[in-house]
Amino acid sequence: MVVSHPNFIFIHLLKSIPNTFFRIKTFGHGTVGAVTHAGMNLFQPTKWKQYFPFFVKQFKYAFGSTADYNKAMEDLKNDKDFIFWKRNGLAVDPKERYDDYQGDFASKESNNRLVKFFNRAGVAGDRGFNALKVYRLSLAKLYYDRLSNSEKADPETAVEIAKLVNHATGTSEVKTPGWSNTVFFAPKLEVSRWQRLITDPLKAAHAYKRMALGQHVEIADRVAAKRVAKTAGEMMATYMSLLAMNSAILSLTGSKQSINYTDPTKNDFLKFKIGGTTVDVSGGMLATIRFIASLGDAAVDAYTGSKKDLRGDKPQERDYKKIGQQARYKLSPFMSTVVDLATGTDAMGKPLPYSNVAPRVGEEKYGVGEYLLHQQTPIPVAEGFKEVANSMMDRGMTRAQTRDVLKGILVGALSGGTGTKLQDIEDKTGVTDKKSEVHDFLEKKESGIKTYSKADLKPLDKDGKPIDVTDQQYKDFLEKREKFIVEDISDLLAGKRHIEDTGDNPDEKSWKVLTQDQVDKITSDELKGFLMTATTRADDKAIHQVFGGRGQAPKEKESRKIE
Image (cartoon, rainbow, N blue to C red; front, side, top):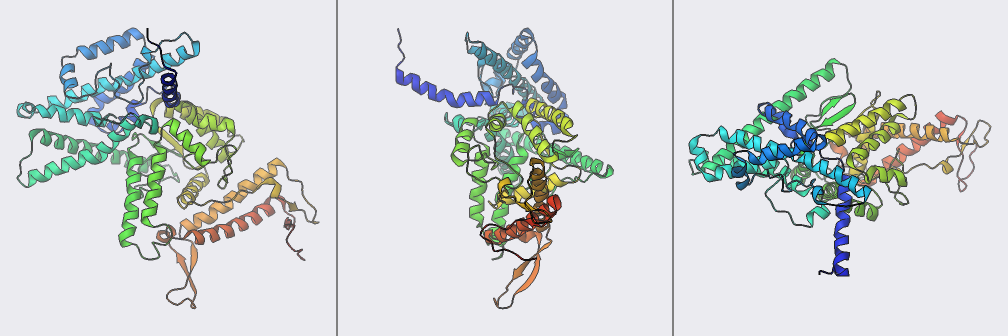
């Protein structure tokens, strides 16, 4: 008879806590692999014959009959090439857990109804992700069958193909430590992205370099290099062609949107746009590219920037901040919650309930229920609530409310059900796009604008008497105030402001245009002064437009003014 030691039970309980957070977050998330793990494969027309059936199989495996699913898995194992590819490292065994989202729910037994419900949903997710294994086998066979007999003769050729297919579908041969799943979200998936983007192309480039110099290159390395080059060329050509078509459609329809081809530091870089929304089906690859670009931007400034360019945060400090921010985005649901509580904000900087951190302009702290719905619910549910909340914040509870609610449900279903990333970027007036740009800029500068509480709003009527501010008036005031502040900061970002320039002689002061490329170099003190002026101006304009009268009452410590 085995008796469990109390300490062992306690340790097991502690280990189960991070897993519980992860399982809740990825609940019902078994049909996203075609985008989150293999999204860039969508841009390979020569592989569409394999890709689209795989996309459909996710749903069939997850929600179809158990008998049909079991037959599909038996067919996979009975494939004449299954053993060959498994031995060469291809992630194809339906009994193995190669992908971070899978959890072996089928082996968990319980009499508790709630646990049974979660287990059934977990099993559906595991089954949906097993479609990736069928897809991997079809890709490996496709690549291998096109090789010559001499290329197949090298036993390492199949190993290299297996690695490339694994990387292209969200898993890796790299062994991640056990604690990595506690700290980071889907570490194998993240490693595979870096292999696709960095290590595989570098290895291929090295092989081509040696071949060009007439040096010996193993057959397997030649095959891998050619496969990497062909895949990259086809993906880039298809992706850019579709972006060009998207750009033409936007232009022909008179849309204010445009495709961002040139600025990888912005969130919409190389993303498709339609109906005021960005669409990202890259499976996280664009986010990784933007991160690398932001580090490169700091490196360029370090060697080519002028003294004025290097004022404020040093390139090294900018890199540290960006790396820290990127790491926080990649935290596991459990660790992300721990860091949220420790810092008082979520990863985007929005203050938590009861936190003393001041929210940014136009933003409010989380309520308890809102935080739980946004951050502690399954991804499909959270995506829907986020979209609804953002839409209502941007457009208000007006006639658009019903449309926004329906859109939120739709976007939640698409984002959570397929892994496609959808994000509002502008409304009919383009205000949302400006707000996003302004908030990104202030966050980058670790700055913000203080909120204006209702208690501090004390407008006077024409006779100098206090006006009782209603909730609707306060809301109108905040909206107009934010609009004016956003306009001022947008002008700053567009190079429409001037800066005092002392030159070499401090006694000879002059003013010159603050160009766009200089905006990122302004110091925190310079920005602080500008924000104070912009905020004060916005306060006065908003008060006069909403209440009329004499404006804001003087503070108790202020001397009386005679008009």
